[in-house]
Every structure is written in structure tokens, then in C-alpha cells.
Image 1 (cartoon, rainbow, N blue to C red):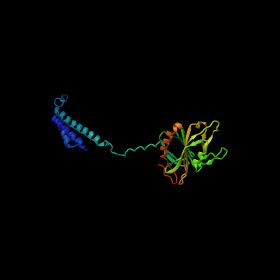
Image 2 (spheres, helix red, strand yellow):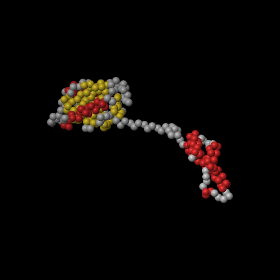
Image 3 (tube, rainbow, N blue to C red):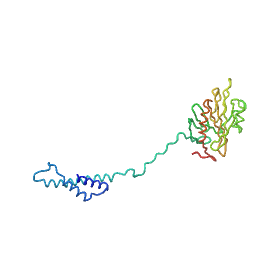
Image 4 (tube, rainbow, N blue to C red):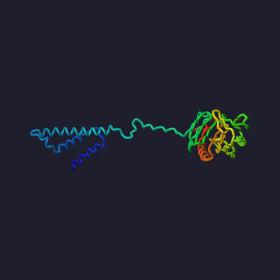
Length: 275
């Protein structure tokens, strides 16, 4: 048993060193080990015992050397794990954020990130339309927006500089006190107003933009609307934001809208570039 362990240690040392050639010491050791190993009786033919054993020794020694060489070659030729040969595998690029909206086709190019249940419904030059369940929200370039005149017979007018005074005299609304808001570094005005609907009132638009309008009809009874007016500044066009919701849904939608508005960035001269 000691000779077996010595022989095994010799092979273990040889594999650990990783030689590329079989040394004479290994060949001699293998041949000596085979010579000391008793042969099976089937090889004991009369008159040929010495010759057969001698040939067997050399054949077995050559076979052992060949086996050792094959295993050594496999170890040497096998690629090292994580060797980096051929370059590292390319890292897949991050997928675009589905909630990021870069409205370059909008009349006042801007970007924002949706959250809190808001989804994008459509983008065109005069309308960036978002939805929050049954709540409608529209961004419009101020240059494309017109509002009703003092009477039904009066022509439609551009958004006045004093929007608060305009909405205070409109029969369609009961407006709350205005407050200021800052969107992407630009100052604006927020006015919330409850709709007023009386039996027999004719349906009509309460705001128009070049490609559409916001309709005032019996379906608005019990609704509240939020107007956000952000005038043009430093070469960036003004925008009008309108949100129309049932009063029961208004507070949650307005809170979610504030989060979205905090992500708005304007493109264009004098604007903070969109990320």
C-alpha cells in the first residue's frame, strides 16, 4: 500500500506542476511499478513468459505515458474560466424607461416622467394628452389656445395676461383663490374651479386649441377643473395645462399630477435641457 501511495503522490505532483513533457523519472517509475505488479495467469505461456512480460512492461509503460500526456494536454488546452479571451461579453443596454415622455413633437418641446397612475394617451403639436383613470389632462401651447369672449356673441380671445380676472367673470365656473406654481424653474398660476350647470344651458366649448377643444356640457356637472397657466419666458413658449375630474377623484389626481409636474423639463433656448 505504501508503494501505491508513493506512486499516486508522484502523479498528483506531476499534475499539479502542469508539465508539458513527460520526464524520464515518470517513465522509469511507471515501468518499475508495472514490473513489480504480479501478472494475470493468462499471460503465462510455457517458454514465452520472459518475452511476454518484457513486452507487456514496455506496452503498459507507453500506454501509461500516453494517458498521462492526454490528461495533461486537456488541462493545458482547456480555456481558463473567466479568462476574458476574446473580450468580455457585452453588457446589454438598459431598456428605455416606458414612463419617460420626451414630447419633441409638442409645440413647446418638453419631457416628463409619468407616475402615480398617469398614462400617456397621445402627443400632437397642440396637445399632450394624459389620463389618470377617468381623469383627463391636457398640455397645450399657449399660442394655440383661445378662450370665450365676455358673451356668447363675442369672438374668442387669446389667453389674457390676467387669467384670474377672466375666470372670475365666467358663468361656467366658481373659481377658488389662485396660487403660484413653479415648473422647471418657470413661475405659473394655478386656479381650481367647480363647474356650474343649469338646466337649459347650451353645450359649448370652454377652451379651444388649434386641433381640438374642451367641452362644457351636462356631463361636467359635479366636476372640478384645474387650470395651470405658465406664460412664455426666456424664449420658451407658454403652456396651458387643463385637468378635468369628478370632485371625488380630484384630490388624488391633483396630488399625482404635482409629482409629474416636478419632473418636467423644457427644451429650447433658455430652457433647462431635458435629461
